[in-house]
Image (tube, rainbow, N blue to C red; front, side, top):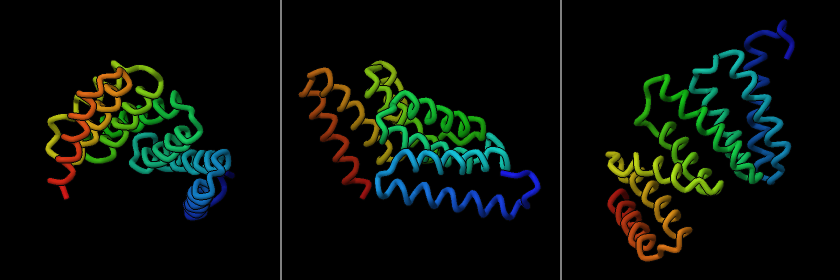
Length: 168
């Protein structure tokens, strides 16, 4: 974007790019989704900085697109960058950090890095939010299922469901 464009116009461009990214994701046109989310992310980074919540949100959107495109390594890297922004901002108990971390765990599992997926998930087993503990248990259950440890997987899935029932 031209540097002579006003901040208000840059914000408008960013909003349009974000909306186009969401639109194309709805129709599963992921190359276009990625294109517009990348443009949105670039504007947010340039205008608000690398350590802003808006930039973290834009990277989360790009991580999701990477996952849809089966580029799990890139999805992991982007999610890790999001988690690091939340760490820098001192917010490691909120949903942004937790979501990025859970995405890192899932992508690690999809990449075959079971130990990393397990280590990330286990960090959230004692989280005060039951829905977050349930997510961690569900990922650990997927890990056990991938290792053909179906008894442990079933137990973890049932525990996750129980936590969700209590949460609701």
